Image 1 (cartoon, rainbow, N blue to C red):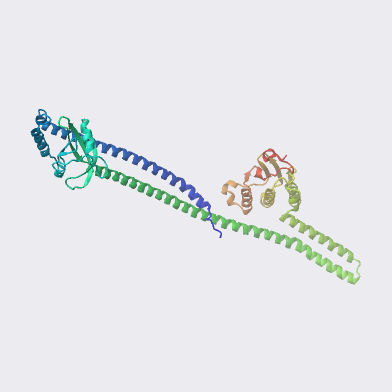
Image 2 (spheres, helix red, strand yellow):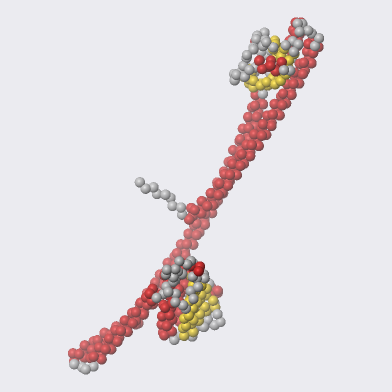
Length: 474
């Protein structure tokens, strides 16, 4: 089963050529903006989180310093076995609560809890080996830090207000004489929520930026599309108008050529054939009557038939001269110039070289038709007495130059389109060959310069030389 691929028309190619770089560049810009925004936001959020946690840690140190100052009077002078001093210290620490969640805790180095004012179920029980829901050691790590003098520890711990686990930062110091670990902690779930909210806000801004970029891109693509549609419609209308004008000119040219052939058939061959008919009718009557003039009448009719044949050959040669295909452009122009001089009495000179059919068929036909049209215009309008035709090859192609000494006309006044169909046909023939046509007013007369590019000159038979080396035809 065959699959039909959508054809890429010129308009579609132009649209893709205009939109793809735009879309790719916008996508690259959006990716860079997103990457930079995410990197910057992550950096800023990390810095914000670190600043908040640093402030929290400093706050814990301050709290614990206050607790240490409050028990110094009882702890410093007491020996390790002074149970009364220990009881007084535990009572003092148990009474020191702050905020809605803050309190101080005390563990002996063996893991027994001595102070937990907001979670009294922990008191007097040994919690060595206790871990949070994620497996992080709690009591053992606090005691280890206390033995080393103090430090921070993060773990999950039930909040007294909700009895649900939340992230907690604790700071602990050790009372080495009594083998106690004293510490306090602060829940940072509000900090994490603030950081998460900040990160979500940044993501929202990034998404909003993407939406803006996408909207701008779509607007730009839509603008390009509408511009392309407008240009396409305008160009199509112009093309339709040009096609209509060209079609009309083709019809006019066909009708003009048909009219010329019809006039020549009627005025030339038709009259000759009528004369032949009458001459042969006369010869038949003379033969029946035994008139000795009958052979002369037959000879005259044969002569007239010969003239008709000559006229048919002339018309055929005007329509498509066989010498153009057989011998090339030079001999065809020579025959055209001789016939033109004989018919009009205008002195016509041709200067050329033997091209040996080195011009391709399109170039030969175009230059011959231009010569025909130019001589026709000279005969009808120029009032010239002399015409010169030059055909030469050169390094950039081949040039046909036709000059006359007639009255001339100003081509710049109305341009090529303002004159007859003949001049437009000449210009269009050159455009089809990527050549040039220059019509210049001289004093007196006019010159027509038709040049075809080098690509229309064929290399000599058996030659492998590039065309750039065979440009000069002389």
